[in-house]
Length: 369
Ligand code: SAH
Image (cartoon, rainbow, N blue to C red; front, side):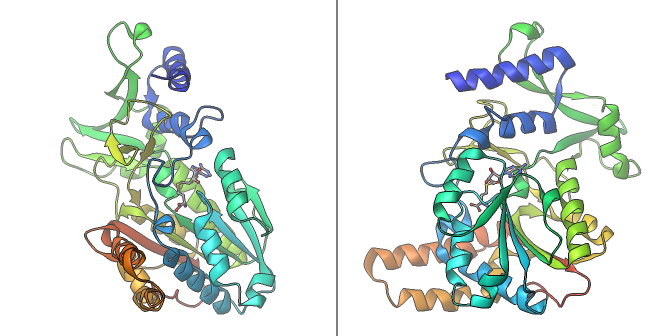
């Protein structure tokens, strides 16, 4: 255990000894975004040297096609003279850099856009500043502060990083999955374990919509209050100002099952070991996103898989054009990257795409047309 590892273990332990076992959401929140020792705050998680690789890091084509999607949405909104282009959790800034490069010939579009990046991590923010050098951008840590104008929001692998609560059905009631210190002499232990407990008052409120369901014994569900708040906030903003959001992530329709996973150096690991040193994620519940968006007066597209979405936007044709200038190993790498993004056995089906838009705007390209 290194020094930093030790500090976050101490923080978690102090919390548990003072207030009792932590909900999984509180555990994830501390591990991922503790202002000093959180995983996203200090680490450089993305890329071959990090813990995981994302679609924009695999090929420039991903950002180029999303750039096309954004321009079409802007045109569908009668080319507003000022609009916000917002990215949630931009990582290394690669996706946005590719979007801006691919659309630079459309000068009206570039002159109209105000770029806003929502990022919690100071270290990733400085990498984003470097990647997007020369392009005026604003950084914010919360969606709440967006200016009132048409808004297009993109989020790739952002929602999977948000904390979740987990519940399990036991003897006809919901119990909550909590994180506790291992062993009876808890105060001396530095290891954590999962434990089922009666839900607190706050957790009972989170469960409220599931009280009337009669699931099988042992069934697990996951609910993200943070995700709910974010989707309500961005939906309200789009409803009031017009615009759309594009959400890409691994996930499914619904919230049944235990999908919590930890990844360290491109391998799965135990979510309770090395807190703050590894990524913790869960499958995004797209049904919940759709419900929150529709409750806010927006239209949500069908859930489309990443492979179909990218093919609808013309990734195969774009790949063909790019391959003309390549040979040897570069050509092989290019073809492998395309395959990784769209093959149903790779990222093509695991990753899903959901579009949401204001009720007044036309259907979304690649998702509804
Ligand atoms: N979209 C990027 C990176 C995905 S990793 C890509 O596709 O490569 C998740 C990103 O979300 C990181 O930039 C992380 O710092 C950021 N993030 C995680 N939780 C956040 C939160 N609560 N608020 C703002 N940003 C957050």
